[in-house]
Length: 384
Image (cartoon, rainbow, N blue to C red; front, side):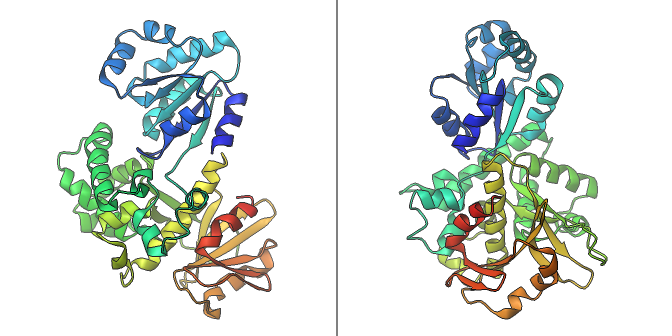
């Protein structure tokens, strides 16, 4: 992402780094652009100054700056437009934010065409591997810790990290975006989402279990997407001659947060957990999204499922065809894993893959069997 951010900054007057709280947005911005001044708009005095006197505030940063969590002062966007247009050059401002709703609305109104949008999710497997954090960790430990940087600190307890994160998220972000009077109900809704990660989204069932009407389910799901807690995979709609299921699949974007919501308090509890397979699928799908975002690209991920319940977990779509992927938490490959992939053989010039929870890498014709530890390098070679 570092190279992506620098490249975009050289081509646009500003870049906006969007992502959930504590995903490393500020660290990335400061690492990539140490020459820029920095202003944190979550800091009450700084926010008050920017809100009360935007002209005076912008005068302090005439040569460019990093404006952290800029969604707190939407009035600044009009002044940014004037500054950027007057300067007439690229590489002026770096904006960060945790709310897609607020940021995207302000950018569309004032800064359209002037800002490159980048999305930063928590640590990917590739980033953890570079830091040598995954080489001595079990798959269950990686799923349990998730990707948030604080969960990987030496003395960190993942359950405490995610408890704190959840409290901050619900009390700050959700209350800003929704008028929620019952925060416990919203936490229950989050728990239900975590228990359905990797499954088809059934809003009626979700609403019944949560005690919510469909309108509220839609509104709360939109907030979860806007604050980078969940993502949806849409069904693959190529003309395959079959009637396809139209509901999307829903995923938590971090397995550590999902484990916390599922009340998994230690990694070893995952060994026999009934949702271990879904959590492993969540890990790999999240990894695919991170690799696309880190390269500054839009997602090309879908899934396939027909009316006979034949499913392929992930379809990567390219201009020259598709790359289907099956995700299995097993450490041993079985031929049955590739049964649904074979339906795509004639439509997959790039081949196919089964990602496993362990084992050894194998090549079986056009099918590649890839252990999760090797997946990051393989995915990069696919030019995701």
